[in-house]
Amino acid sequence: MDEFILFEGDFLPMETMNISAVENTAMETATTSAPKHKWLSKGAKFAKKATMFATIAGVMASTCATQAFAAGTGEVDTSSFITTACTVLKSVICLIGGGVGVWGIVNLLEGYGNDNPGAKSQGMKQLMAGLGLILLAIILVPVLESMMTGAI
Image (cartoon, rainbow, N blue to C red; front, side, top):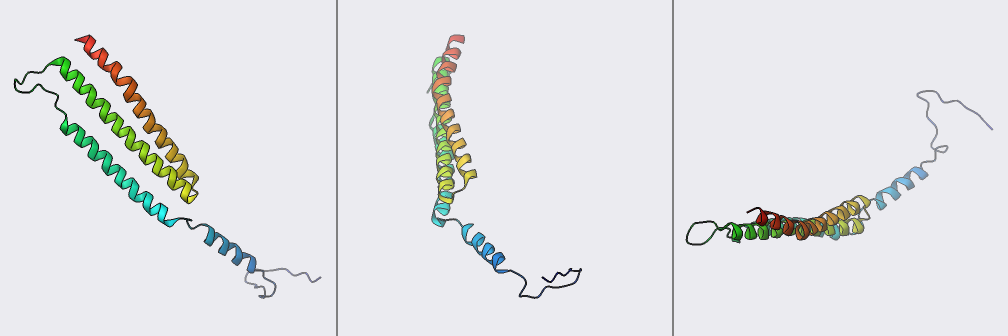
């Protein structure tokens, strides 16, 4: 066998170089890195925007539609105010929790569609956070209401 030493500036002839393996590897990575379902990622982006818009619109509508003060006299009935305020608080927390949960489901589906473990993890965290907020509103707000009515 012939042995030779390469110095800086020396080139190997094309026959001795194996560039087909490099080309094959580059082609494999180029074809496998593209998302499998492009329509799913576009739909998920739209669903995220629509979910955020619906959540904000729902919170604004529920806040604007609530009347906390007594009609006509201008005086505030504290018991009615506390009941109405707790109902509004419960509704707002449930709406925010529902929005976060739906956004989590969208991220979860996007992660499964693109085979992206980061999006799957983020989606599951958002889903659990949304469910936690809803559970918090259902359990904690009535306790808060009874504490406030007991303090009057």
